[in-house]
Length: 409
Picture (cartoon, rainbow, N blue to C red):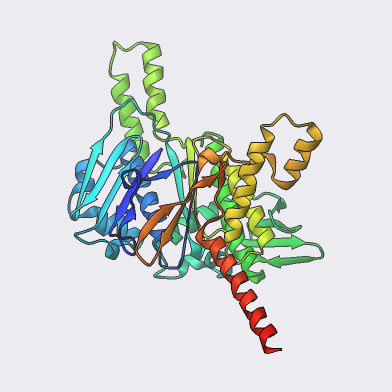
């Protein structure tokens, strides 16, 4: 399990204090809080450090290279527009399965962990909140000064569209999507209508890129990501050839050892897990659509125990629907009849249920820069959280208005 400690980075000051200050990234990790509280900051730093660890394992660069010339700040944090979020007081510490990374007093330190930990080679995708831009603008690749992660996401989205096939059903409404390769248009089809995605509602424009990219990358990982030219650069191919050549040069090596070492080399370039980091999956969506989208994200996360889903959200519905998925997991384990299990699966699809042991929810408080882990209640996500409290505050305010109205009469 990857762990992350952050202090004095942007709006995050004290950070998460219990358990030595480490945020734990389980199968599903949620971050909630007000605008500017640091939700995306945590998600972006986790995504960045996970990618650096992967690059080190793959051999894209050496620890010595990564630690020189303030590359962490000027290159890696700058990619996520976070370079101005750090200062001499900033502290970032990441412990993965292969490397221990520390940023302290403006210095980046990399330590290799012992080989006794397994490393699942991940496909890491950061899904930015600006994703609706790629489906609402014709030729977004020609627009300058967009956030760099959006360009990366755009590349994956273009690949995903090529693999839609004929009439892929979307998780909201009775709607399908097709991609016409000749005209390069994504077409939505529903009951009695057919429109270009550019003409669709903002909800569809936000949903379609998220859904297609998640589905596409999940399928690549599920099939053990056959090593295509798209996934491996020319430099990486050359590195593989050199590794194999060095192996073949050893005359004394047995066939069994050769096969085992070759498998280890090739495993560095195959995706074995999917790390899906999603900003605001609820964006522009009706509550029931939010539920369907969350269940889709959980379904693809569940394709492998090694997959991870990280979400930032402003929506109380996302937490509540996640609670449904956890409760369904608890109930499906009981000695129930097939009819009762079928009724449960009509509420939460079987592929989307999730164990509460795989879920962590963190609340970021903008007033003091503190991160708080929400405690569970009987294994379920607690309803005592910032988002639900705002709903309760609304109810209280409405009651007060009714009292004033009664007094006035």
